[in-house]
Amino acid sequence: MSQLGPTAAATPLADHELLAALRDTGGPRHERALGELHAMLLRAARFELVRRAAELAHVRGEDRDDLALQAADDAFVAVLAKLAGFRGDSRFSTWAYKFALYEAAVRVRRRAWQHREVVLDPERWLAVRDGAGEPPDRLDRAELLTAVRALIATALTDRQRTVLVALTIQGIPIDVLAERLGSTRGALYKTLHDARRRLRAELAARGHDLDAIAS
Amino acid sequence: MTHDDSHHAIARILGPTGPEATCEECFDRLDAYVDRELLAGDAERAMPELTAHLRGCPACAEDHASLRALVRERSGPVR
Image: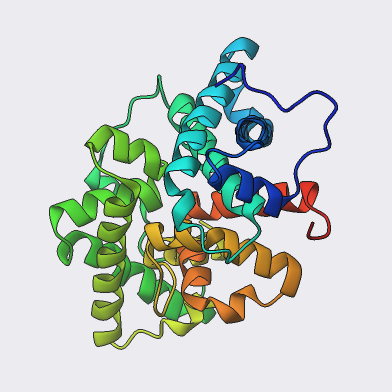
């Protein structure tokens, strides 16, 4: 798709014009609309790479360009595949941008961790210090910390403990963890959500005030 | 670990309270959420389950921040 580009010197199509021309596959402006869409997605992918430049400090310039183009290409395919499902709940450009940003962000996270070993260490919960030593006015917090630490060890399944520790204590990005475990962001977040719900329920049953943590 | 550290550690582990959208639902509705944020300013009130998810999922929160920044930079008034 990289050879496609908007018609020289033409004013870009407005959002609603671009959407209509993309949907009108036999129409006179369809090819131009395809080019404008790809250019738009490539701008969005480059925008994301610039925002996350610190994570790509070790990646050469041409490799970054390649990452942006791959993200734009995959987003282009996704947008066209889902075009019929666009309901108009947002501007078309906002809807389309999210595909390119998502594709670019996933690539950046995975590239940044490409040469880093991901050690899944469910015993890492030990790094969550217990509440001993908290000042007297923080005793509730100290007790909660101690309880969280104990419950991570005893109340969760092995899978829940591994995912919760990796994502919330070890700080492994969810897309990287998904790739290493052969899973998806959604499936891992469901596991994390279930683990959190279990911890909250156990804490509430023990009389801990969780509202303070939400603030 | 300071007081703030321990507070954030517990908050990160326990996640948001209340009903929460999934990652898939978040992606499906993120564009509408961002446009509501920028055009109407009522996204948090109108879509509380998505707001909760953004507080609990760092990756979706990053995607949200990027989309908001890009739309703010590029769009201006609705065409």
